[in-house]
Image (cartoon, rainbow, N blue to C red):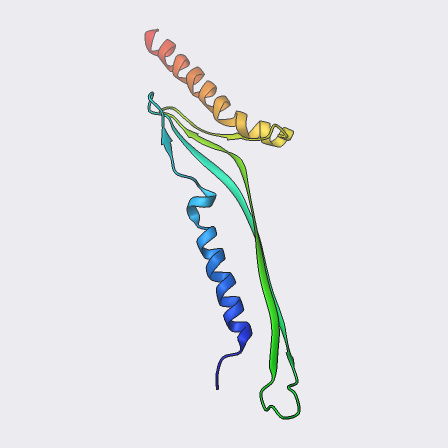
Length: 130
């Protein structure tokens, strides 16, 4: 038995989607700056896919049925930020400035940890000097 025509429609659309969206679309190629900092673009990708068809009865004299169908897909790619990797830290810099209070708190945590570590080190050094 031969394959149904909808299979070819779906295969074509899926192969085209596969060509358009890969891991490099979501996490871009890293760019290194002169000071050794690496910047990696990060994007949000969404896509949709639809396919459909119908068999129509053939004319009286013909034995074959007729098929009508279609398929389509859409892709949305939106940059969300940049991952900045430097010698001392890793930060996510968002493209939009719509950060919530929770996002700001999460962004501040590494800075707070560094400050606490510095205070502990200073305290240890002062104890050793005594």
